[in-house]
Image 1 (cartoon, rainbow, N blue to C red):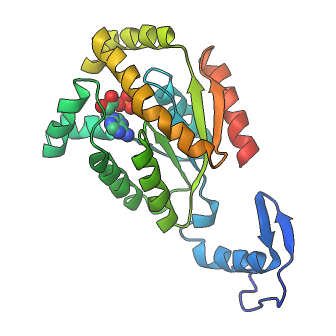
Image 2 (image 1 turned 90 degrees about the horizontal axis):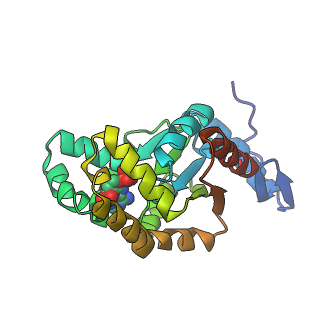
Image 3 (image 1 turned 180 degrees about the vertical axis):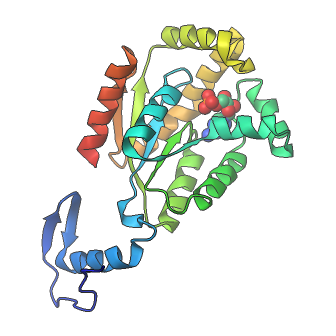
Length: 237
Ligand code: AMP
């Protein structure tokens, strides 16, 4: 059933605040109603997209699992997608492995292509949680363009803050059970952290320009960190 009044467009536009949508106008509200009718199938207006950001070992994977369960988001981890390509022995996976084994970033065009396909494969998602992506300013710009094509955008970037020594300790511990070769060698771990500072930190600068970055304490219990993340999300929803 549809409650919209799509055909009525007011002659003047008066700025008002609609719950959760700042700076909309009366005209926008009418459009908004129209879109509710039109976009219900895809839920585009209701999409909430966030980036979980932080160095390797900052707990993005663990917290992502809890966040997607609470907020019903689709989890997109480029690390997981790349490991899947490697396990499937695809040419893309073989190419990516050469970089991953050295703790280096995989070329932008490879990961942007993967994310583009993943967005296309999930047309009904209520929103996406990007984990490990974007990792360069070029990836951030590409992501904004891809989301724009879907009439949506990044709502918030949650940046987990963890000290370097804690990261190395966590990654070596994870390497004992994860089976990930890039978690067992301390030189590779430090190379990944250096790569993060050299290239990935620029992504936070990119989103800071749009006032989208929230720093969240990434040390403490899993539940404490999760509570900090949820609080930041709820304030932006
Ligand atoms: P992660 O599981 O996110 O720690 O990623 C493991 C490795 O996959 C990284 O060290 C990179 O070599 C590669 N990787 C994952 N995501 C990206 C990305 N967005 N851009 C470039 N390389 C990536």
